[in-house]
Length: 84
Image 1 (tube, one colour):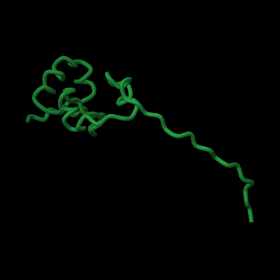
Image 2: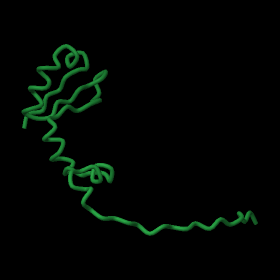
Image 3: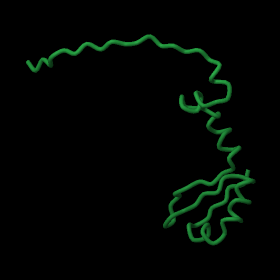
Image 4: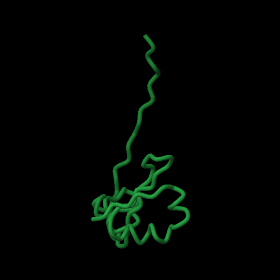
C-alpha cells in the first residue's frame, strides 16, 4: 500500500491524479504542512468502517416493509419538579 502526500494546492490542481493515487493507498492532503484530510476509495472506506449502518439506513433497506414491528405505547407521567 502506497501512501501519497499532497498539499491542498497540489490536490486542487490535480484531483484526477489524487483519485488515481487513492487506488493504491491513502492520499494525505495537507493544509499549511499539517495533515488535514485523507482521500481513499469508497471500497477501502467500507472495509475500514465494517459497513456499519445506522438505524435509518437499516429501516430504508429493501425488504424492510416485510418486517413486522409494533412497539408497545409508552406512557410518561408528568410530575412537578422537586427543587428542595
